[in-house]
Length: 633
Image (cartoon, rainbow, N blue to C red; front, side, top):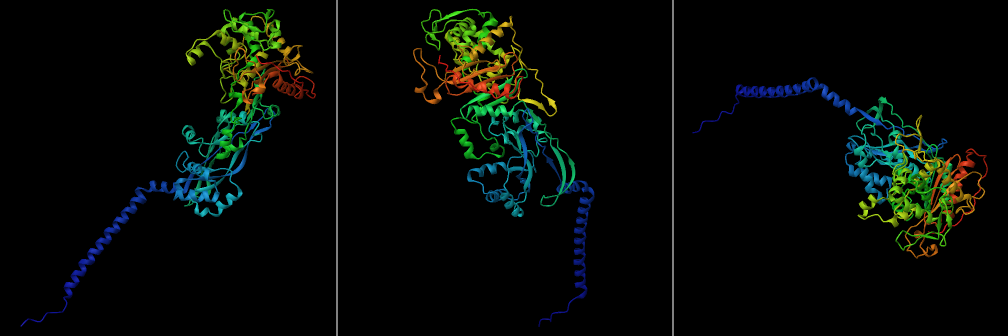
């Protein structure tokens, strides 16, 4: 029979178990507490400085202060480029939880067109350093600002910032000379000083804005601010003021610039006017122009495509980059070259039967007047624009001496000191042709260069500069657009100015000037109608530049050609002859003869400067004469 179980508990045994368990629990608690206390001591004592600094950095932020861009004025202090207050949309990527969702929301709130969405997203990735705001959009409208304000709680890291934005009052007529600023792109970010351009979203892209970027931009400042957990600024703790950019005063006269633009009247072409004694560019107009204000905030795709596809090329600066045959405007420079080299004398006479022939060559290089001008000396050759005289002169000079002498006048080089993007034109030589075509130079090509045709190409800026050197009797003053930067005047005698042109007899200049005066005032002058009623002495030379070459027995007939295949009209002039105050070059594309379609424009420019601006003569109303047709050579 089984013994009955003892169901009574053993209190002593239970107490021992409890004590063991309690002791273990206390040990675990003490161990964990020791770990916590040890970690706390480590963080508070050993790592105190590290975490204190991190905490401070999360609360205090250093922000760049972009400088105010310098203003641009014309020579009389009239504003050409100013800064207007506007509101920009910026984004700090590190403060955005979901970038794609935020950008999608912004696109919806701003109501952006579909063709601008991708560019909008690209801008969110363009910044110089972490925590620097990226510019998403400029010049926000009031309705856009209101929608962003209502949804501010949904847009962490997105800010609407007040900033000054570039504005051009004379946007179209100054488009090429002035240039414009635009958003800094990814390539430019790599080259810019990250400290000085921190907080700056715009940079000079073209023209004067680009050339004098360093002076116009200024130096960036800094400010230390306290922010809350969402990155909103609570207060400013410190401030280092930015240094504003220097104001720039140009040599341009806005009235002369407007006149040049109006004279072209929408026709493709360019007018450049220079003060010979100082090198100051008074006007530099290229038509058609475009609204440069569109490019500041970012032109829309459709508008930009329209400018690119326009057959009249409004984005192309004809004044500085357009290369055209010089036509007969090269003849005064050829005449001076012949006199300098001793190939001709002022009194030397040739007989013109209406053509010129090279020795042992049956081809006839024709004068524009088919039956010829008969007996021709230097002055008459210039007045009537006789080709035969200059064919003969070119042959006697040879291409090597022609090249060297024309180069002294600035052809084939970049003549201006501070004009961004100017072209070289083309001053051909034996070496150039050999390198370009691997061919020898032919005597017939020298004759073409002698009347401004063939390979020879000049820009309107080069032609105006060469005319100024001619007016100065060989004294070089490099053309420039800046008159003063801040309080400092820009000197006329720049260090890289070419050497003056020296002649053995100073009367050579007078003889060439006399021939050029007869162009406008002589009985046979090709532009005598334009010169009617002149109240001062004016010297000039017309030119007709071929767009394509004619065969030996072909006759030019403009009415049978498409408009863009017709000749270009050119004219160069300076006045007054005895004390030159202005030198002008004019090119009107596909207009025809220079005496007919360009001379009156040059006369209007000289009248405006000498008469209306009271440049040494009594002020009175300018009167424009007619013009005379110049036949095709």
